[in-house]
Image (cartoon, rainbow, N blue to C red; front, top):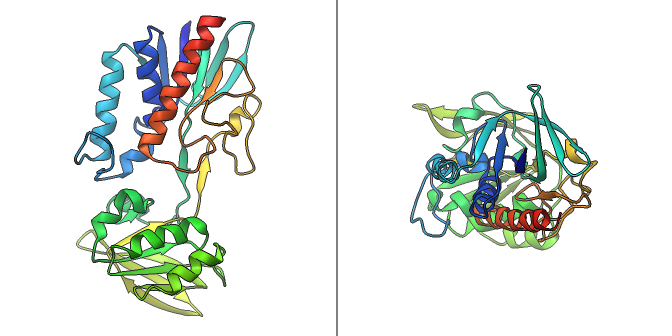
Length: 302
């Protein structure tokens, strides 16, 4: 039996494992895809304290190496269920494994909604991005597009318009659904175009690099040359399997505050899967530390 099982191997989960190990707890981290989570899609990270510039895969590898050297154990499996027994938790996986722990930290992360077009996976992080704060500087004085029409897309466009030559907003609905104030800001910026009723048909590449979009509007097709596409059509938290243990909000995020506690004693949450206003590497890491220390306090009292 472990002291703590961490479900998820992104920055939140690995930080939780680090803090738990440094407090002398036995730790197992279960990750289903690959360690690092969303940061592995970022070719350059320049807003993580203490690092001038680093790519997401390298940062993920460094985090993984750090927790392994601290003595954390890892498993590449998919958690499907957690049962609360008398004094401990049983974590079951799709692969048929069962692990026991006195406390569990859910750091399930989120996944970005994508357009689902051919060749998309190969272009993510190399022409397709999901975060203007993270990647906007790489497109300074370039033409970029933003897919989406809600608040997230409008906020991305506002940030990008401050550094890009031109920002083209592409909304598939007849109207933009984001706040009127954001729309007014963008309408008053000469380097912003706002197009509605647009369907993105496919990505255009040249020499195996992202070069633009083929779109359909008003029954006609066209090509928009651009250097990058920022997709802002929503996030999908992957928390449904644990709804019996921790309350979810209307969007499916864990309805926990900065304490990272849940209604189930010994179950904690951390990272992008939690309801929050800012989702960045540093906020995920902060959650991981908070959840780990809360779990350690729980173990000391039970």
